[in-house]
Image (cartoon, rainbow, N blue to C red; front, side, top):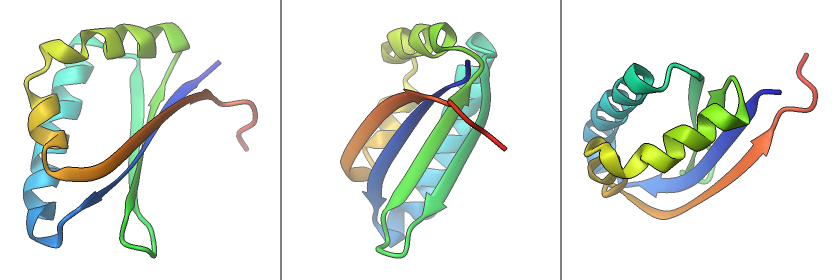
Length: 96
């Protein structure tokens, strides 16, 4: 079953361009070593916060990538531009 990690955070308007560049680099780096990452979706909500959903083929692949997160220097560089970040893991039970 597909696994999902969903983040919610804020990014200052003045940091958005840099954040998007760093996020893109982080995604590319993670995919190199963890090809189970199938899709990422970043949505700006009407309150100005963002939801960032990462879809994985399996929970095991997501878990392996999360365990390796400290080895990706892009991760803290990217997240340093966010504030009030939260994350939740889940699995897709229905998709149409």
